[in-house]
Image (cartoon, rainbow, N blue to C red; front, side, top):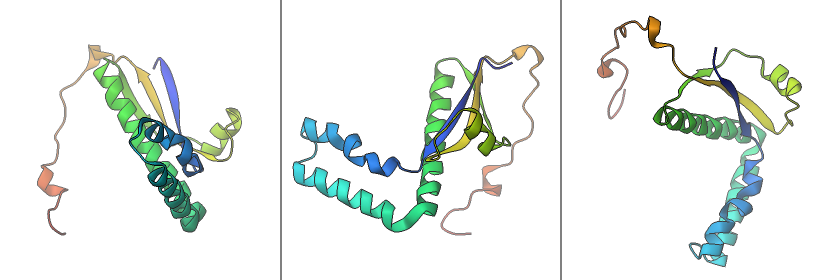
Length: 136
């Protein structure tokens, strides 16, 4: 019953856009031309050296962080969201004609929560049961 479903994609080739992404910093004088060129070169080299597996993993990490931010902003605006896995990424890619450089990471439903059947929240583990400090 959600109002929308968002498909969150990771871009395995995002690193190739580092020049465009940092151009604003160059134009505003935040980065000098030398710093800009160095950033573009080092980021591009970093991703290329690590290869396709790293590029895919990084695309998933970045998309996941973006999805989290989207969900937090949506909640702040009064919307409710739910992240979804368990779908067939290849089928989603096919049906939506998503280019191969993009990885379907998750879906997020967006809508308003039906509070009429809301139950009390269940037991939550104490933080000490799943968080450790300074080692395991």
